[in-house]
Image 1 (cartoon, rainbow, N blue to C red):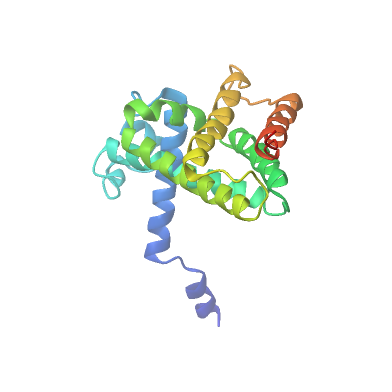
Image 2: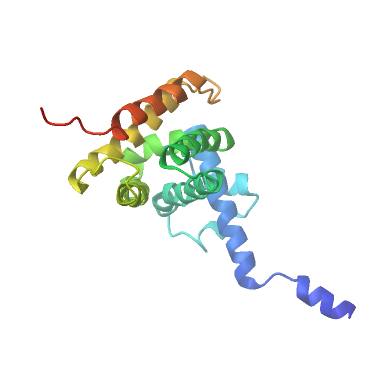
Length: 211
């Protein structure tokens, strides 16, 4: 029985490999967040992960290869966090508020995310494009569902697409404004209130009747 217990608790090769890969991504995120992409060397990444430098090449062919995957990996974690935080919402506006707040709580958990995101456009454009494809695609599906349920104005897809980018940009610029020199995000409640007011007075408002 004891032998069986030890076998059951032993990690598989795949599990160990996934743990090492996750450790490299986490270390890369911290190093890029601290030094930027330019100075995020493989040596710094492996030292932060407490791994031998040669281990890096078992998972990535180059420094650029991990950079090209880093932002989408972190973006997936962000989306999972937002989904979890907004899971109890019943209406469109409730979900928007909880998702909005969740984005900023994610930044508090991962303060290096903003630098990774903002520098990626230059140093990891492939990752930057994939990240925005993932983010905007999910947001479009959410707005289409809200439109179908009659929760928002009956806007065309051509109108919803720029709206998605406007809403994402609002989060991004507010994060830049309310992040202090130490990388700590302190979003004022007034910003949340104004965001929700814009949505409720605009997107949720009925179109005026023709005179």
